[in-house]
Image 1 (cartoon, helix red, strand yellow):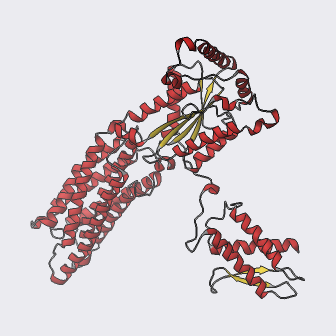
Image 2 (tube, rainbow, N blue to C red):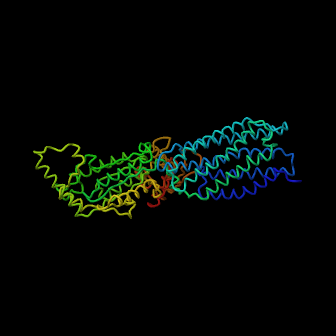
Image 3 (cartoon, rainbow, N blue to C red):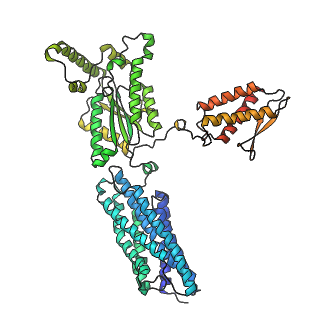
Length: 599
């Protein structure tokens, strides 16, 4: 039997879409199989075209098989959905690149809503095609289903939203990262071809022109408005996909609120820390606000210092404190508690905190590091380098000015409040020497002092900007690290049947009661305990020591020790959710280990 024009088109589709399928699989492996990447939809589209063409070729020995013809027509109709989904994924990635530096109207949530619209249209099209096939089998006439029409209507709406999103993203192309602008170009070039393909579907479902009938229509119109248009779009998308940079897992997990960070400023006293902290504050304010006003409102910037918290420099003075009690300096501990509380309140997923202060104790910096890690906020250290002689010279000059001000205070009057707030006070000489002696320099080899950035007294505006640029890259650029809290700091889930401590007490008490009720006078028994509160299911076994009976005091002592361990959180890093079953299992194991040691 001679091949028809439709059969020739089907052969061409198989020849073209099999390589396209392998390319789509390779792109999915490279960029990810997630729905946000979009390459999975390209695999689905290629498979739909290959299967549809195969169904068409299967009608060659059996031309009267209507099911195959209707199946091929249905796949031809719903194949438009994956193409639109791919375009939405590409425009979503382009919008994500914009959101790293400024706000964008095209958010991830809005893109997903449009994709949901397309998905509903896909389902309606598939069900409608099945109904049309059934109608063809019953009446011998192909009738367009209202569900197919509704599905195509959703496709048209999704196309309009896609075009609108593309225009909005194109208006902010200057904010995209290098190599990402080609995404907008690919979508923009593909849109006219998708429009022609969409017009063909709309005419075949809404119009009454027999030339556009999906089963018996004009083959040349189908070839020009459907088949070729789809091949062009797939070629454009896969060509762009092979030139795109691979997004790392950390970069893919960054969101609009990715600028949060704790910046700890440290250095010798009177080494210029406050001056550099103010410069950094102004730099970050300009960097965040450069894009647009909404960005400034979204990302909050905090500068926390002793001066802003009204902490006097005398709290660090140990000259009047006996040598044997200096390690318990209450005034300095109270000051650190105030700073710690202010820092903890400011840390969130929308804030950048600059902590200006001595921060000279490495244990203190470690405590701040742990606090930031607990809220998934990266931290870094900015060290202000200055020689001891220069810092001493600055402090001596401030002491001299303060003494002069005291001498002439009666003639000139007191300074205004604004002047007092802007002026940095000196340290007493002995206090300054003591702080320099106690200063512990940050070590970039330790995780709580890294990444470490350094500015020295002599650094000019250009070098300062380079250091601040590197610091910004650590906040919002490719050098940013994904922070996960330690498992010990993650709150354990509580059982819905009651408070955690109540469940812990109840389950352990029940096991103790079972042992007392079931053990014999000679000892050495194996007490079976249900894994769950019910009597059914797997059982746990408590192996009692042989030759003696275990009394209530010993069991209660072991029970209290077990509860003390678990109440305090010791050793729970690998336990996970401590539900009743897990409590029973660990308590039985604890008892068996204790009995084995005693035996």
